[in-house]
Image (cartoon, rainbow, N blue to C red; front, side):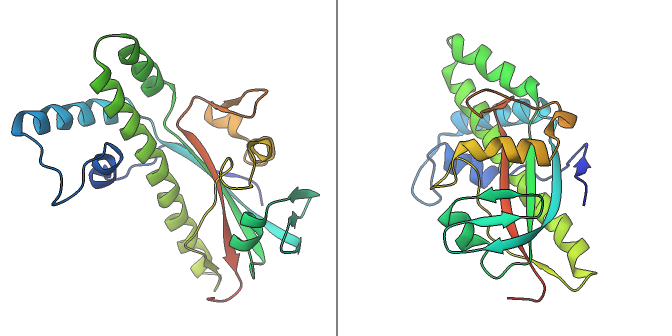
Length: 208
């Protein structure tokens, strides 16, 4: 299956997650009214600078052990974390979401100025929007799978976490053809613009 691209992902702003990333906790942290207004304004500004796009691709699993997963096409993820996530799956869903370059330029601009708070809020918004973009992709693909009597697992795992090294980002980048989304990759396997994320998730033949 070829990559499926999403040119304009529209989602509700995940404010609860944004505030949590900023260090605020429900029923624990009190925010002054004026400070709350300032943060809300920054959140709105940040969202306006985000163009959330994504890609997804289903690939059959050729062979799996407790230490690695081999996909059709001679792609091997040597990761116990990924092997655990994909245990029992017949396919894997590769996915990516990006917030675009405009928001990153704004974050860098404010980080270099005296408005560090604005930069921090913008960064939190972009991080949570990218993550929510992956949630949206998973819901979309799960609807497609349900018509085929297949199921997408709830868990996903991203490059750079646990033993799923960033080196595998190059495979994710190529297989998802992320150049189509305006995303690049550095020699150190960092996606550019930042706030671009990838992940894998299991596709089961029946409900696990």
